[in-house]
Image (cartoon, rainbow, N blue to C red):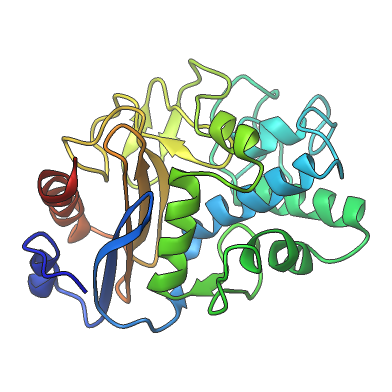
Length: 271
């Protein structure tokens, strides 16, 4: 792909395998690393969210349908505002009162969608998103909160779609805005944030500090990172998305390197 000074930075990262793609509205602008499928971990959630939004757009169910704990809706589940605990059905808060990051909430969401579709959530993901975006190397292998495996080429296609939506475009643009504004909570790996802004399946940078995106990313930047050393951000102001897969779990090594890469990409590719 295009020679890039920014992407050359990943050559010094303390990982065995790293693949990165810079994406604009017309496609990939630069890429480095193999197209080998790797675990996405929680970067699965934006893909699950897009599947749910596509199903809603098709009329299978609604954002404000009851789902999850009493008083919770599909919208609450997508926004980590249902009150569900991280990994089980324990209710930690009334819906809409706290931002509680919840893998279980996304599993409940996927179960709700599968019941309405009278099939499996994996099949729904294939039909509504993966086939539509030509993502042949992406597979849901377990929990719809964290168990997708896919290639950097496919993750780049997801980034392009979120940058310039074609699947449920109105809902996808709504999903990139703050849902239930003002809720405080813990951003995994970065501590308590007040507010801890999220959209519908996407974390929103807003004015959070510290953060895994770049200093120069706009507050409107949205996306997700994963425990397996993966991330995808979309900056609608810059007109860019950045996708990254590695084979080393997120940790202290990533704290300075991810923002530095993001800022270098913005400096090199932002129009």
